[in-house]
Length: 94
Image 1 (tube, one colour):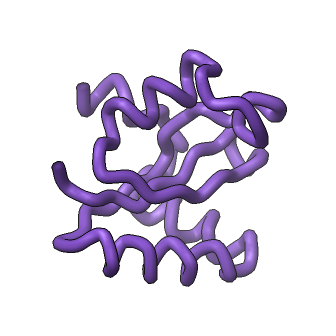
Image 2 (spheres, rainbow, N blue to C red; image 1 turned 90 degrees about the horizontal axis):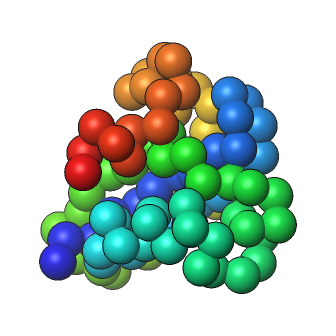
């Protein structure tokens, strides 16, 4: 499996969640089904608006920590560079 850093959103410029996984398809499906209790389920954050692949889990974790420390506006700009319409990319990928 390939490591990914991903960002989920509740809606355009809504609540954001940044995560890391080695199985993007399964992890996002878990978020969408509500199988993961906690923040994303509570705030209905389940639209995959951004993702980036990494060579190693270590580099993905470093990047996740970096993005989590960013200002909210910087995350919006990252998302909008790659996904200006804030579409849920999950259906496009899988």
